[in-house]
Image (cartoon, rainbow, N blue to C red; front, top):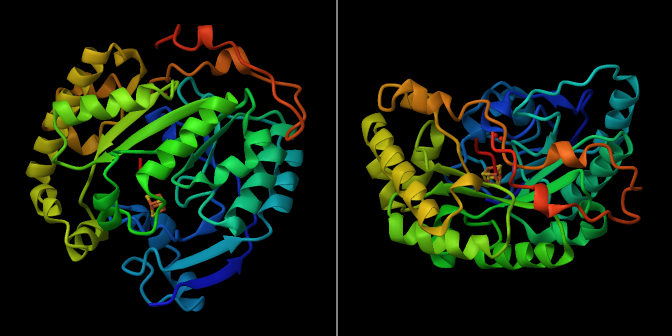
Amino acid sequence: MPAIYGTETILNPLQESNLSKKGLCDYVINVASGCLHGCTFCYVPSTPVIRARQPHLKDKGIKNPQMDWGDYLIVRENLPEQLENQLSRKRSWKETPAGQGVVLLCSGTDPYQNHQTAAITRTAVQTLLKHKKRVRILTRSPLWLQDLSLLNHPNVTVGMSLPHLEDNLSRQIEPHAPLPSHRLKALRQGRKAGCRLYVAIAPTHPSMDVDTLTRHLEILLTLEPEVLFWEPINARGSNGKRMVAAGLEFANSVMHHHDWAANFVRQWEAIEIAADRLGCRNRLHIWPDPALKNYVESERLETWWYRPTVEPWSVLHQSDTVPGQSCIEHDSSNQLEEVNVYNNLI
Ligand code: SF4
């Protein structure tokens, strides 16, 4: 089916978020409805963000906003102006210990999936930095490299989802996203340029064990990421059906709640062992799912909820750098000192 493109307007693009639970942010901005990457595991289409907006999306010509995920992109064309209006009016700013007042682009789409969303993202980041806000970019696309002069900023951290480096498997799991090897290359370029980086090792597929996770972590550590977020693949809502429809046999092994939880616990242990082997446990940030509560001691789960990351936001608050004009090198010696950060995301 050919992709459906369209535009929509939005009144208040900056939305408060509870993703501080995962140490990610206190606010989110989504530059579009829909996402052309069409990752089979994506559970955005099962969330109220899409479910509650089905009539609106159907008016745009999308027959089944859940099962047609990946085949439509409705960009929020007036977002930059509305964001400026919203920030100019705003008198208070939410800043939780785990969310750090950070604004995430994006939680329900990829901010750099194509040149159209990239243009909106670029203006949104410029506006946020002008208003001295902290920004977290989360993407699967190397297009962010076009904005290096803007994103190489102490109040910006750029993350890419890189759950594995299996390009062939990736074509089944996330058929239209840039290849993992291309993402790795982009992160290397970002590292070389001096950007603050993080990696979302998410979602890992069930066949990854201690040794494969160790090898993967070993490669990721060469990027010197400030934090490594982790969660395994979930099969819930329409995403389980989409994974099975894509021929992903492993989806059947995590389709039932008990099997999913058992896999979660097994891989959680495995990635911690892998991180211990490589001495990077302090940079590992687990995203435990609340649905694990009958499988994992509550204390262990609560350790991770609303926990700040080791990212050095406190050191880097409020830069006077003009967005897109220059960059201030941050002091990476402080970045791992305070141990004390946020779901599909992308
Ligand atoms: S997981 Fe992220 S990149 Fe993939 S389809 Fe969902 S929103 Fe897009």
